Length: 96
Image (cartoon, rainbow, N blue to C red; front, side, top):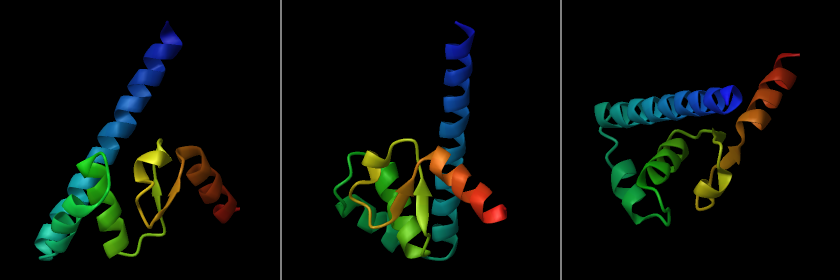
């Protein structure tokens, strides 16, 4: 049905944005000779290497939280995770 198609399309856009953000972080790390992120990410207890890499990048640059649809993917992270809805609520509360 139409609603399912829109949900799938939105999820694909979110995934694409997250992948682009990851690539940007990796490129930025490479430009600044921060190769320890890539090395450390291999040693973390994550099912998905990309999630481990995002966690390491976030930790290295002192990010306050990671926005994700699936917080359990980051259970091994030292960085707090927020759902998209929680992030939007936080942004709205901070702006008002």
